[in-house]
Image 1 (cartoon, rainbow, N blue to C red):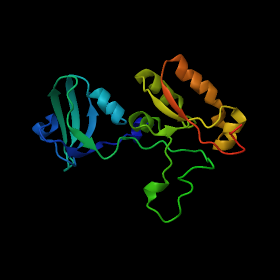
Image 2 (spheres, helix red, strand yellow):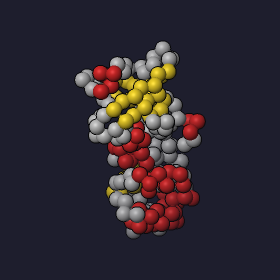
Image 3 (tube, one colour):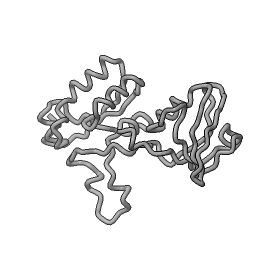
Length: 202
């Protein structure tokens, strides 16, 4: 994701008796930056907030910008909740698996039911499964640097031709190299297989 796609992070809830409540944060305020860095997602936010001294650039509900300095213990939570865990948008799935429940949704439902995610951050935060076919080198580098583990991987097949045929994505054939990548870096994964008779059950 590019830096320009990172939006101010909308606060939806301020927990009672928290640091944020004491300072005067309100739902509708937005965080622009923490110690000069723009958080891309909840992972960045938690990492940046682990510092003991924070300088927050905040946009209030009226559109005014404020700079707030906070001194706290490194493990103190600010007590903020946000509208989404992904501040720079969802990494969407480009595969066309025959068993995809999103593709099988009937028309006429709410739009959010048709979003196909293949986002490693949701895998790390919430245990959703991804195929690893939609990751850029920047994202691989971040997984390694931040030790984002475990991730949950939909393997389905390890033979390149079989997996490419299942996912309808030429990048799907790299799965064994990708699994070795995790092994070499001692990063844990949980794997799943959806068995399709006559395709990947041999």
